[in-house]
Amino acid sequence: MNQDLHYGTLKSQNMLINVSKPRHGTDGEKKEVQEKHGYYNKKILKITSDLRNAVQLIRQ
Image 1 (cartoon, rainbow, N blue to C red):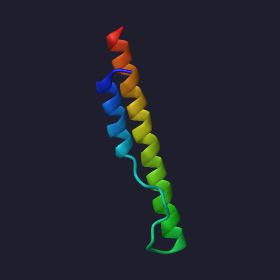
Image 2 (cartoon, rainbow, N blue to C red):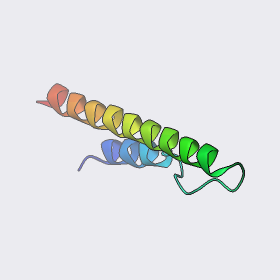
Image 3 (spheres, helix red, strand yellow):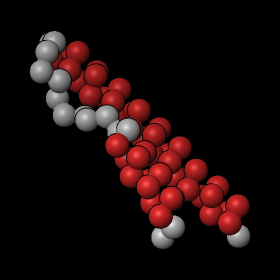
Image 4 (cartoon, rainbow, N blue to C red):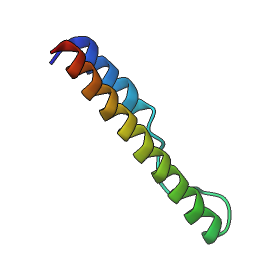
């Protein structure tokens, strides 16, 4: 694996939001925050994989 691509992958994984339960707020609020973070994480992973695929296409 190309070192730059590997570094980019690691960087994007560091952007992921910790989805552990928030300490403050009611149960409903906590659940809402958790779902929101999960949604953002999915978006970040999707963008990361799209970028990785684009880089591979460009290199061909």
